Length: 263
Image (cartoon, rainbow, N blue to C red; front, side):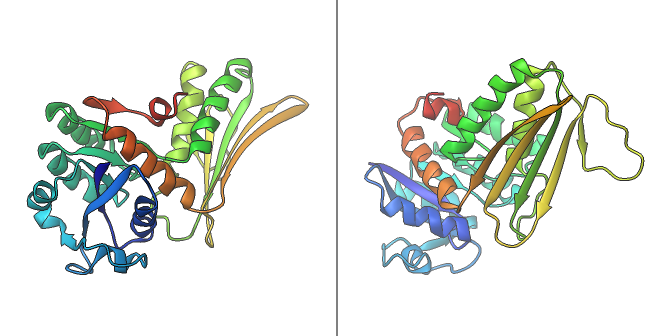
């Protein structure tokens, strides 16, 4: 049984992750952090019953992680919070499962350096859905045979999502670009915009869309569309808990969901 902590425990994803943790036979919730509901039971906040795990202030993270013997911290918050808290957790010898998107290159580099210097296992992924990671593999294979195609990536998410385009859309573009030898990205189009060899990336925001990603390979006279649709955030929460169980038994280093899924 792996001892797990959750940051953003009062948020939508935090509460869903806690629900998945208590239904797992492989992990156990021992710590929870947030800026709100401090001192309240994390299970009560997540509406899953009393768990005797109080929500702690993030300013107390180091002491709480050590006292609770947390082995892995799951972080699905916002970029600035993750950039501050992930190195603190790593310095305590705690493994990391990071699902925060919108990290700047500098923030991601700082987090990765803290993981390596503190000799802990960790995964940073834009998407923990099993289906999305199979989707990435399919895109990589398709791109090998469609190098002459015009490529467009279209993503849609709920109206509350803060970053754009999604980390998953960017990862999809990266997977294709790597196979095709490097492509420039164009984010949306307006006015005169003749198409070149770029990959177009487009974002839609509205309603309660959990996450839709479509990649269009357009050729003369035909096209191929490869799509993944998340019906709910459960796809992400379940994958994150699976990742935490795996990271808790892993050697130090940086891993991907492909490592965890054996893809």
